[in-house]
Length: 170
Image 1 (cartoon, helix red, strand yellow):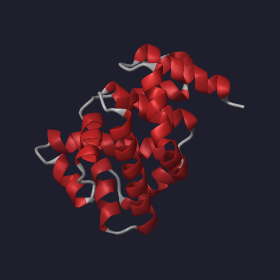
Image 2 (cartoon, helix red, strand yellow):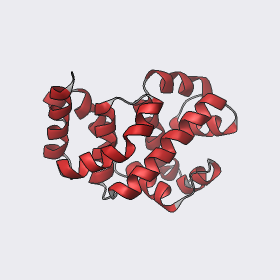
Image 3 (cartoon, helix red, strand yellow):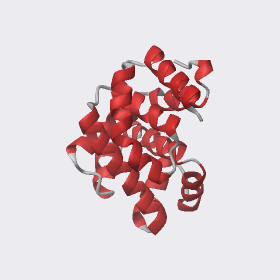
């Protein structure tokens, strides 16, 4: 029923990102199952796929990396504890705020975490160490998350483009 919106979002990403529609669809296919499980809709999945493809992450590597990341963050939200505290702090929120944000808008909450990783680096910390502390230490996972983190507003703009493809935010 939402095929027109999906198509519009895909074209907007292809026209305004640094990746092709083919690359975006390949990446989206790899992250769709885990993304859906944590609450992302089809256009959110396209946004993540577009952003990952635009920073040069290949579908196989990026699909695995983001699937692991979605699952680990979702598990931290469900279980609470130190990992949730670290994720929330990185995103600039309390644990309760992050949990609420994730339950309402998983794509946005994850983007806030990714943005926070860049802030950690800008403030003289180590985003790589944060990821290690969270058990997100695989090379593909770190590469994907850190590439997104250092890409400026790429992910945020991708999410905006998916929500409102007619705006074609670049």
